[in-house]
Image 1: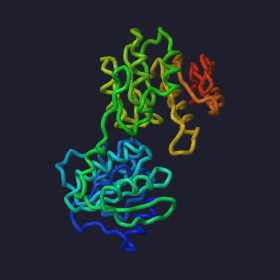
Image 2 (image 1 turned 180 degrees about the vertical axis):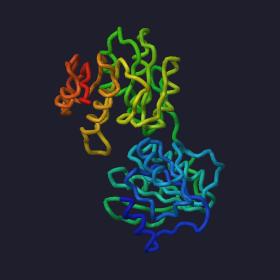
Image 3 (image 1 turned 180 degrees about the horizontal axis):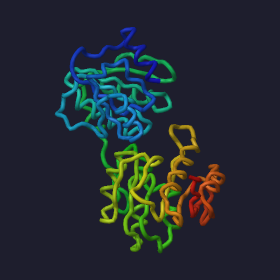
Image 4 (image 1 turned 135 degrees about the vertical axis):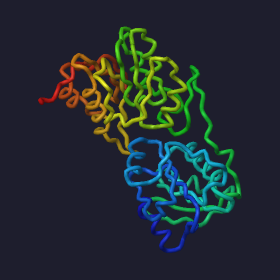
Length: 335
């Protein structure tokens, strides 16, 4: 992990950061330890709200999106490699644009996130320092100015129906099968105040807003890039947008319905408790007669949590991989 590779490389002289100037850190995660770098000179860019909040709490300067500074404004950059290849290339292109001529760009990532592939691709274009290999990953560096990497810049994707996405967000290539199944199962009489919990780029919200009886629909999404796409994709005036952690979001007053395709991965490993946290959040925000409409992979163990959280639960649609579930009348904890 970065918490071991970065200090190891700095301590043994494999890499060094410039003595002066701002340092850009792109896409670190909450568990990443950046203490080996000079905190006062760092600008952290992280659009996932829980990670953003964690770095703010530690006293870092944090941005939700790439800075709008002029090219060459930073003395160095650390790119924390994400799994999506197009997103990773986009971050490297941004670093090459924002770091001054001959400034150092560090790239750190796990093998499971494609660090070897990125290293190989970069070596075909420019001079790369020998990597530091440790903890199932690699850290290496190259100098800005050898190649702008402008052709790696992340470009928006336009999907069928005119929806727009960007690389790296969930289901960037099109609606996932579960969301499409849930959208088709939503009742035509869906009404009142609705929350789309984990709204992504807005596919489910756009489908729900075809129901005229909905008074307002709140899109709650932790990924700032996905929410920015949702703002472009959902232009209905009834839509309201919230950059927030869905598991802790609280609306101003109880709502009539929640629609949800809860995530169940925090990394490559499945974590059903993340989905359970979404279900608990939905139950908290619903009115006593409110209803959760959700879709879930068939293998996920949600039956017990749903039975504990709602008085009524039923499957209203299935296919080989997914269940669509209607859960209503949330159970209120005793006061």
